[in-house]
Length: 208
Image (tube, rainbow, N blue to C red; front, side, top):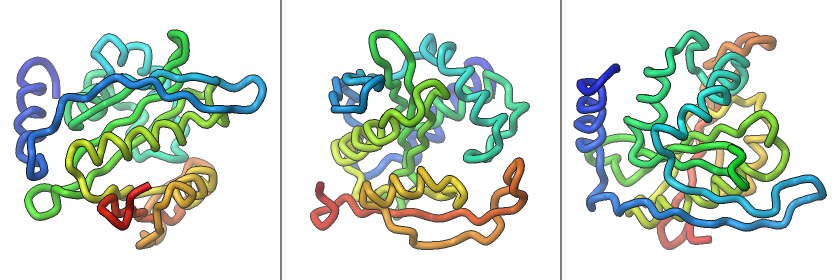
């Protein structure tokens, strides 16, 4: 998708996948946390703008080129990546500390119609910010946003099984592995590896 036509198409696609209520406007939030020495102690999580994507683009490129966690084509153009990360999702947020970009995540319905109460998220952490608890804070934030938007569950469709840190974190955050996709991901160095479908209910039984 490119230009105004692509953005309009994305808006139409997104509008057709809303849950029972209109999405509330996203609010900027400050999320503080205690971290080991040398790690961020306070991060800001706020809606991402088009200008922010310019700063985020190198992180997107690095993750796609690594071919270890996401099934994005490393040759994806900036315009196509922007459409996937900002235009199509219902919300996209940026995590930063004192102006330094730490990561970003998107949130969108996982399906339309009868499945629109389940949302899906994707998280990317800047290489220099990894191992500092940023993914956890973004996940906590996304769970709150999902509830405020009226979603009743969150599903990760394809968590690469060899991404052991992510699998462990999502389990700590209350997600269960509900399915395995055999050899569904072609890892850059490990070849064909399994992917997990991970799910968490956000209704009464899933409250934090």
